[in-house]
Amino acid sequence: MPRAVRPFPAGSIALALFLTAGAETVGAQGHPTTVAPSEIRHIQSIAPHSGPPGTTVSVSTLNLPLEAKVHVGVGAMREGFEALVEAEQGEWGEIAVRVEVPATTSWERPIVFVAFNAIFAPIGMSDAFHVTTHDGLVRRTGTVTDEADGCLTFRDEDTYLYALSGDVASLEVGDEVTIDGVFFDTGECLSG
Image (cartoon, rainbow, N blue to C red):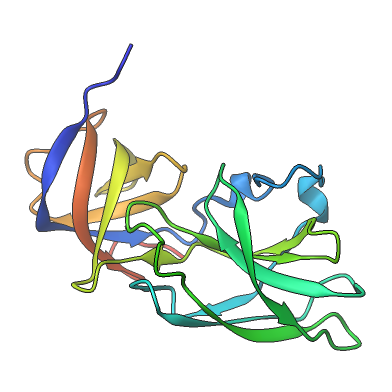
């Protein structure tokens, strides 16, 4: 049975991502090679954390297993990943590359940066990068929740948790909505 999703107007809500969001989904990947979630390392740094397609993102980490070849790409949870650049790996597993967000990337879902080994099995995954329109908007579909004291929250279809601010008076816990809003890395309700 299809669920009813109520659209919410653009620009009236700001979304701020909780820093712990999505941690339980780290093993989700679209590559046919099975990799245990405990074997996928956390890519330690991406900057910036949001921007429109074409944004150049610095991706770096010090903790990857030593590999003959390392590729870095992008993808979305429960979707495939696309390798974009090859990374030179240092003797301690470190990499540092600059990756351009592909022009075809949708503003409706976050993406992650993924490090692959020579056989394209994932070995590292970043926190979420929030693709925006050129006006700074993101679109998310999900459910309004109350997972933070005193703040209305929203969990999207990829299980990322956001704090909502702005014109939220008409939203109630349990509402399934599509929100067009401005994304901020920080907010008054965040604890990370």
